[in-house]
Length: 161
Image 1 (cartoon, rainbow, N blue to C red):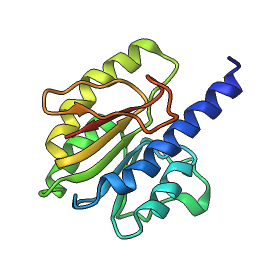
Image 2: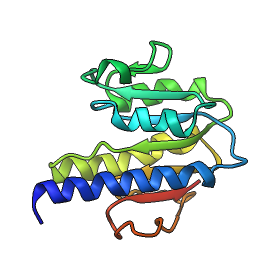
Image 3: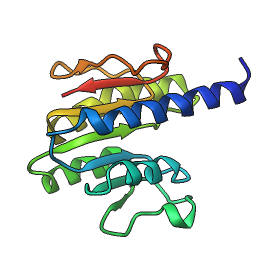
């Protein structure tokens, strides 16, 4: 598969999973956490899916389209492992959705993230919330959710908290 085809497949899976989440979170209160802003496409899509929820974005440095940059109250800049730790106190009731599309081409770095991220996110999630990731994650309190129809296995990962 070409890198272009792989990218399209990943973006389609991401969109289909996020679209599914809008209905899957009915009755689950809390904001959305977007881990990694990138160029802002996913953040923009989340705004359209969840217009009544706060969306907090975590990013090392902003390089997004100007229309897709959150206001300063919702943009948390810095190393994700440091900023998530400090942010937990701001979410006493927990987040309904955390979306982590922060994998890289570095297998070892992806492995380290997959180990560290669940421990940081778990205390920030509301019961019944969803965690989406482009990398497989593991946490005792999370159960894998089936992927929406048409999303290939191991292309995206969904966990219910």
